[in-house]
Length: 171
Image (cartoon, rainbow, N blue to C red; front, side, top):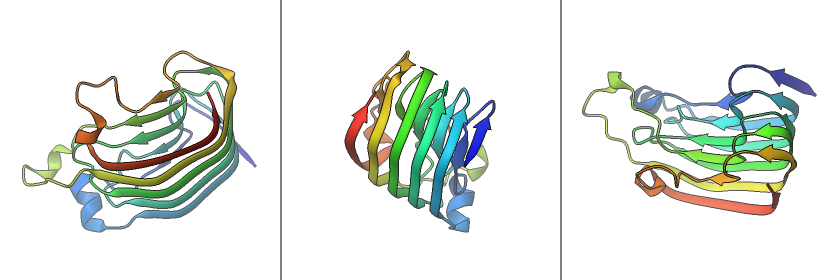
């Protein structure tokens, strides 16, 4: 059992920034986050935006968010590349003020040090699930789900595929 209160994301899972992360080729994998109380102005649990090495086999469960900016934030961008797969969010609760429930943000800027030749494929996201999510005790000022629809370009221009599963989600 742990708690976090701070000025940014409570937990960030990353695997490398653009060309440098792809060259290193080490994914963030086999990660379990459990029994955490989280309070902060940004994401409760963030994956990315630096994920060009890939992220897979992540379990996030029994997390309580209090006055958090959002419960989960999947971050990517046109030059991030990589793949995110087998990520499960389960038994999450939120109370207090929140900006947004769950966010996919595909607008993060490129690393200028990669040069003009860096042209990765869009990020591939698969087997992302949200099960038993309860934010009925939270006052969400924005969207419950923000899948990038508010941006000028659709998410599909940044993400090659997305498989998202929702069950017993109350936002």
